Image (cartoon, rainbow, N blue to C red):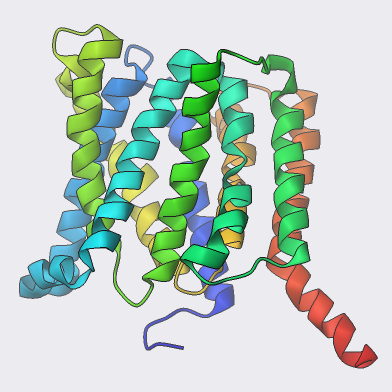
Length: 304
């Protein structure tokens, strides 16, 4: 294990912490009802990257630029590109298909990670990982079933690119775990700022595009960026050094469970019964992914 690389247990805790941060998105959005996805994505990405840049300067000082240059260019461009693409495509998919449909399709990220990881990270998912990935899709399907609709073909195709983007981003973090990949995510945030801002002209219909927000909203987004994205992504990148790609994406699926919980706690939105059933299935899937392989290996040892 490399120096500075967390152990498996610490890696899981870091990814869990990241997921808790990501799950606060719905709560933040409810405090900004006048903003659409383009405006939120634009300025959230900007403040995320400002915080990440400040973090990198605080940690590395004069070596900050060196840390950007140390990352192989293909890795930097892939992580930054897929982060920016995933964020933008998510908002786009919501304009083309229902939220429940996008959520169900988004649950395919562990499946994509399992299919691609043998080539991108040279990790072969176990039976326990595949079982957990399928269970996660079922769990999200239970939660979103009432609002699920087929949608149009373009909407489905765009929505499919969202979990694919997250899976590839995760696998690149895992593959290049010898490097600090936070600089690549930082670049992706600034790219999202410009991309979502420009897309706001096309889809949002705002005179100022996604850039058009008032000062109070900018300040709230300045809090959302670091709390809901920057710190979680730092933890996620660190956790990726010790946790396989499929498990990474599965633990992140807990966002589907936690997001309605925070809304329930913060603004009194009581989740439907299906949310509890589906949440139980997702949590079970995550536990199987985290502990399944070790349990199976212990069962095989006495038999051997």
